[in-house]
Amino acid sequence: MNKSYMKKTIILFLILIITVLLPVYSKGKPTDSLTFPLISDNLHGMIYKYYDKGWGLRSETKKLVPPIYEDIENKAGMIVVRYFNKYGIISKYGFILLPIKYDKIEEIDSNTCRLKLNGLYGYVTSPEFIVQEPIYKHLTSIRTGVYSVCNDSGCGVLNYNGRIIIPLVHEGTIGGFWNSDAYYTVSNGQNKAVMDVCGRKLTDFKYQRIYSTDNNVVFVKQDKKEGIVRIHDGVTIAEPIYQNVEDLTQKGFYKIKHNGKWGVIGYDGNMVYECKYGPLEINRLMNSYPSPKKFEKVLKYNYFYTRLLEINYFIQAFGVDSPTAKEYLTEILSSDHDYSDLKEEAQKIMKTYGIR
Image (cartoon, rainbow, N blue to C red; front, side, top):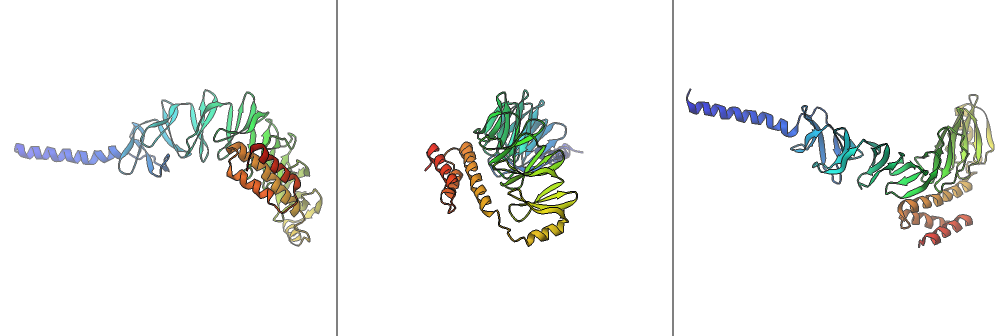
């Protein structure tokens, strides 16, 4: 075997080795992968693990971040990494956006991760990448971009941009309803009460559960029994003595179940049908009820009253230039209904904040 042949054989062998190993190294061995949107662009990356070296990030064609991390996860659209058991956030090119110093980073809503450091909590948002360093003893998401927070002075509500919606002066953690910027719940650890965005408590601490289906009433649970409370004034229209309470398609009317039978109560607290009917029968009775729009006027008033509360929310959350606040003020003032008290309150808000 001559030297020329051996030389050619060695070269071919080296080419084969490079051809086989280079793609494996550049792409990694995808033992666990997840495609997800990255920060501030529409590109996508792939998390990969390169054998036992660690976790990195690659595209379809090349390695973006070398496999140096103990873990990489997509959380709220951000690339969260773990390194020496501390957490931080990097860009798709590996640049550190948030120092790798936190004890924990966890997703709490679709746009927010909670930061934990030395027993305190903060947050980081996506895509704005607004960072609130951990200073709170308690921080949870009420809904996307709205947080319940507590410190030594008390509990309140914070917007994602750091503006305080409800001052941190209340005892007990604050929760919210998925469909309302106007109303919230506050808990003393054992029971809950209803409050509005202005911090006014509308009920006592006596319910184990409070949930809302609209901005007219809340359904409450006390000692495993259910009732109904008018949300704008806190008046109980159905004491918590029922097995179940439900909405009806006729606004201002609610189904109540007692001893296995259904009845209907109105927004004014008066019984429409006693609890002695089956579920289908009570629905048929309501479908033929002679005054299905009985509460239309008062519910319309509630609608505008809630708008006033929401105006307070938007001003606190986004400032006096909030277009939504201006839109709602215009809606109230241009209404053809004679809600003089609400219109007067709307004008007072405009004067107080200098809104034109």
